[in-house]
Length: 97
Image (tube, rainbow, N blue to C red):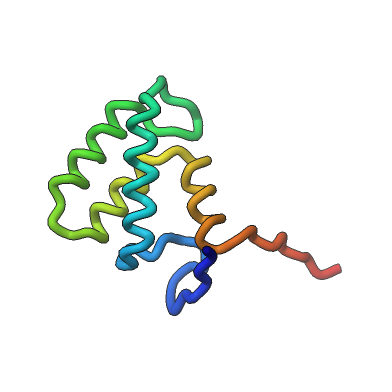
């Protein structure tokens, strides 16, 4: 399902206070952990940083903050997949001639 109801902020960023976005981010983070942490690549945080952010998120009493922390621990491809699921494929910019 694509949700494009974005009242403020970037039209292609997570809505930190949206429970559905929080749940999607948590599921993606849990899947990322379950798949095993590998050495850092240019598009993924170091494994120890992923674990640290996960611990901080689990200790947070604020769901929006926990979602933000988990978001920072996700590889770029996972974030892109979530954004596409929420907002669809981004239209390429057209430059004036």
